[in-house]
Image (cartoon, rainbow, N blue to C red):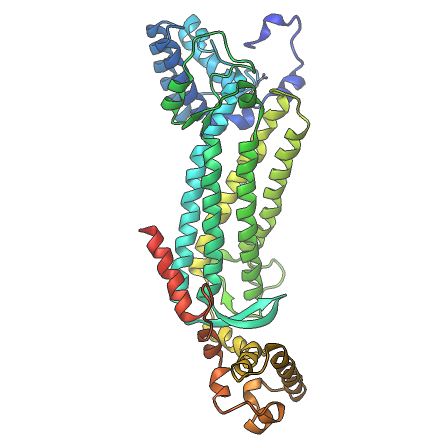
Amino acid sequence: MKLWKGRFSKAATSSADEFNASIEFDQRLYKEDITGSIAHAEMLGRQGIIKPEEARLIIDTLKEILNDIEAGKVEFTIESEDIHMNIESILTERIGDVGKKLHTARSRNDQIAVDIRLYLKKETAAVDAVLSELTDALEKLAKEHTDTVMPGYTHLQRAQPVTLAYHLLAYYQMFSRDIERFDDCLRRIDRLPLGSGALAGTTYDTDRDFLAEKLGFSQVLPNAMDAVADRDFAIEFINCCAITMMHLSRFCEELILWSSAEFNFIEIDDSFSTGSSIMPQKKNPDMAELIRGKTGRVYGDLMSLLTICKGLPMAYNKDLQEDKIPVFDAVDTLKASVSIFTEMILTMKVREENMEEAAKYGYMNATDAADYLVSKGIPFRDCHEIIGRMVLYCINKGVALDDLTMEEFKSFSDKFDDDIYDKIAVRSCIKAKKSRGSTSFESVEAQLAEISGKKR
Ligand code: ARG
């Protein structure tokens, strides 16, 4: 039965009913919806808007309905349109007229707004939990690889040697900021819209502070029109998801490259790889590719909600019913991607020897060779030029800088001495970094110490 049927002389066609209904996807909010309703009923009872015993009956029955939904005993109907009216109808079926009093001083507009905010508060904690598992995994791997030397790249060209720990800690920082970003977003999710009515407030002497306290919101939204009309907090949440996916996707891209025969730096575990239906030899990094692909999907969720909201006049418009689809999709996609990714990196095999071998070639010690000449009093720009010519000489000869004889070194600059060989050895290049936050072994230890210090 339609709860709003009074004003209508004609029923909607069944296709219009189906088109209008959101129960198919918003049933996911049943718990938040009931939680909000229980707090609302309690407030109505306390304020004398309904009788205390009516409030009691409503609350007890809502709890029963919650249990029945969780036990799979409740069938939602398209006729009742959305989760709010489905639950209200069931309530009224069970307790008759008293059930009809629950919607006093409330609208579905503030009801859905409180549901999504409660949902996103819960999901922020869930996202934090999976992201913390990821940062823990990165910390663990970084500790295991403080001595694993690899090429550091810019433009995907070998640039300067780094350690794998350093590379992993770069991602640690990105994902830590993602956690921070979600927590910051939570501050704006954590504000109560309930009690706003449809758009203008209500005529009842409600107590919104009580509702906020009861539902665990730290603030009450100060303007009812804003409270029911805006979804900026949800956009912001999906934005946090999108940025996190972007970080994951970059890492996936690297794992895909690293597991190719061309790099051969890692091997993704069989349990996170798939085969080819035609090429028997193939082992494909599908999980990493899927996360990279799903990143596009989450960007789409963000664009979708931004676009849904962009032309809406104040206050609530039914367009907003569409907000839940991108919100749910972003939450599901992000959590699944982060979890799979964490398991994948914890089980992958790192081929340290290949990383180190790669770090020896590509003239990645050229900057260190230039720094050597700087230490002998030659201005950096001139050193850059000298080493550039040496690299060209080596390329033509097919050797590394380290392979040159002392005479060859001297022919480029008489400032070179025997200690150059040690200065440009791959580990020396790493060790020599002095700036804070560098790849030096010492700096990486300091970064690790800072991480574990923060946890305590
Ligand atoms: N199902 C609706 C939504 O998700 C609930 C609010 C409906 N409000 C209304 N005035 N039709 O947005």
